[in-house]
Image (tube, rainbow, N blue to C red; front, top):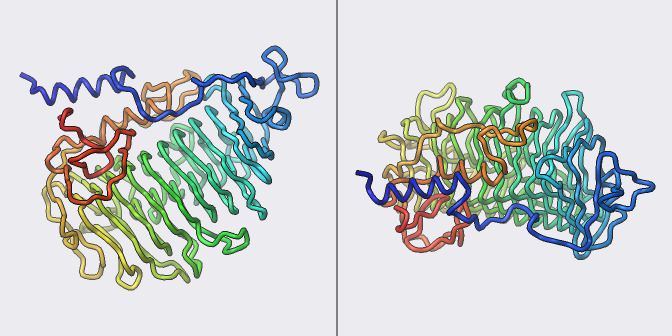
Length: 494
């Protein structure tokens, strides 16, 4: 006989996968909204004689943005839009530029595909498939560039598939841009030596509810092992843009999986360029799901180089993730000042294979790389670390060790294995993802409920640390007893 708590879990999972019985509190598109200021763009539209109506659409997004009134919604019909799109306009009430059918308006170029530059504000880009064409491309797919004037602000990228840069980053946000929201998107396959998202010398950036992975083979590309982190937060240019150190950066409710990059990088890196100032300040990384489902070794899933006031909390890191340090690396690069005021709490690190932190060319497990002279003040408290029943690693030379957590939990959280994961790249000819989902949010929820929910609620429930986020990875309100990691377990569910 199936126990009631297991039956409830099965029913909950089925309702999630079939999109009924569960209403996601996270809204990933604006298609439910209406506007009396609707304008249209189509591949065969006319930029000269068109008027932006449904029957007489314009032919380019760039022209539409230059002509519509404030508060408008621009509907982009399905098809391929080839060439560079540069948006440069300030709005007060905002403009939404939305693919009429999600991911069926495809923006393509072999240079920068989409750029938001100059004096631009209150622009939302939603529902597009954005990519380079082939390996002859020049740098960048999407660029939000504040320029020397730093007047790009209040920009939102929502529910887009941004993939396959053959040169440099998938998305660069730099030069003093402010108040940027990147949520409910999918990112995969950046260029060699570069990132999915490069957050560089900016303020007030939110990266949430996205799915990050690499799957080069699906795009008929080689796994070169040269690509860098999925997300980097840094400042490369000192005060040239009136910003010193990227500031107030929130990275939460994201899924990161299927590492295919360089041995020297990892999922998220704070600081990078060895500058003599803090390259990042006031950075919060929480409610994220880091999945070990690749045999390729990374440096560490989370690293810091020259930053202060960084908090890493309520994240779940799970699976066989070959690394040099399964927990974190806190390091000084070049002229970096010593990292200070760094916090790790309420996280789950769980490798049920017993090889926690044992990557390529390593004969033993390792949790952190945190030499004493590279890390000043820090907190390491109220975490769960499980190593498949094997002993937890300890290092005399590292400042952070599992034994340093006075509230440490060593119980098995019983997280599902990641072997059933299907890498969900986009199938444009079928208008669906490889895992069978039709939306990015569908992909997101399926991965969380397949891999991110502990079955041992006694191991992960804790009332100790009051510093829990208000919501969990799928947007559920957290309540006591609070759960360690990204997902809040309800007593009614288990």
